[in-house]
Length: 147
Image (cartoon, rainbow, N blue to C red; front, side, top):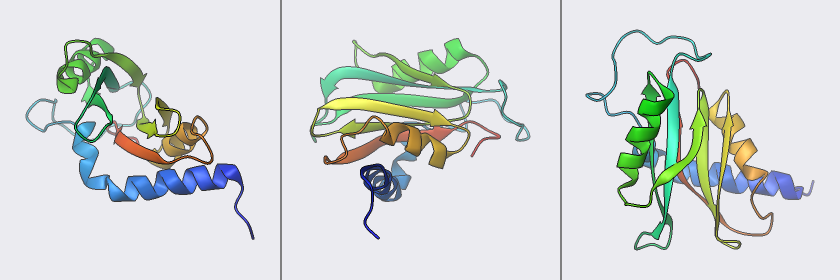
């Protein structure tokens, strides 16, 4: 059975996710910087944010930074902007569950998706990708209680 364009985009995004699972620190919560305690269900308990710059790294990808498990939206945004590390970083996406930021190499555009699980966030991001192009997940993360 031949794959549809959407299935190819999801497969590309899923393959990229598998290749960059170790990169989850790009949108991760340093243990020393976040509140500790038992995992709690999502639904507004925690905030995450992804910020991006118009500057590119040595590999040709936009600079991004992210943060999860902040107690407030403002804290998540401030931490993501700080993690981005450039003077022009701005909030790209706020979320309370899971999110993915992916680079569409053909169109040179950063796309994002969010959802209740990482898989759902990948699917949401895939909708914005060029079906015939290459995509790379630059960052991903889930707040406590999501997954």
